[in-house]
Image (tube, rainbow, N blue to C red; front, side, top):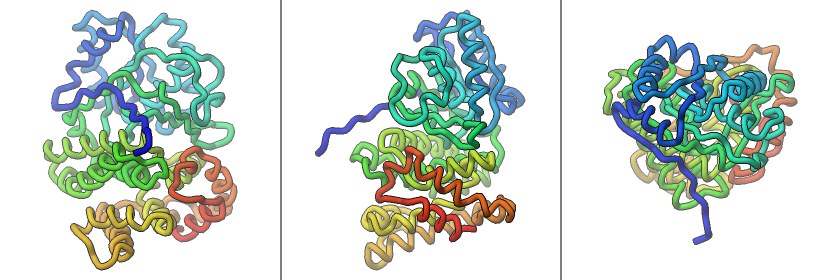
Length: 382
């Protein structure tokens, strides 16, 4: 077997694990925490709960609420300035991908300086980051596990991928109890994100046995539990989705992603859309494009979602992709671009595809994908 690297944070998983946030911060030397979250988490009461936990441990905090969906470069830079001015130490983020990616960007600038766009791409962060404790409130984004950070460059209208081992937080806290306050839409979008992470990581050209087993388990758990979680808010089902998200995150953090995420980053940055909206539209069409590169792995996915082999490996692979289309259709989500993008914006697709092909995620696609390939994919799902 080839030599591989597998980087993950310390993970504290389980119902009520949020209660350990203060102890975790103190173990990392926290005296004055820099706290990052957003309005939704505030309104749900989880931010105050976290503040109470920190207070109980005698830890002060400075709160930065400047987070929006698809976090902007200027929000990261404003947060880094606030971090430095207040003499804070450990960074704690509570929320979905946006607060956690914002916190990662702040950590980069707090110790490395410059502007966040200076670090776009892979392995450009040279100095160690402040200690980080991340508390995920979704089962999907994976930012609490991964070495990825996605920030929108406002001027270029594109989501930048920043990838480096130093972005893996010190501690990830995964408390499934938090998911009970999430809407059906958010649960579905988060699971779609995790499903895309799992599948693209499995097909990645740098996948390893360590990542592959996590990818396939995540696909299985999401396929089996998402409907039940949405319909009943069963804590057991929500916990399984949390497990799936952790596995998918460990997989993609170490194996990379692919053309689907590269394209999703460009579309999301330009149209200000969340990943979870785009994946049910793009994922299966990109899988069809990638089918020629690895029928065997596509068949592995097909066997999971169809419950076994159906004819040849090619039949099983195609059947699995079709089954995923049915799965997304049953979740009442958009599956065509025209449902979420105005017709007059179709003319912008060529430029977006030319930008997407340079995204770092495209490097680990199972085979080469040109901007013309991207454009054809967009036309197929329009």
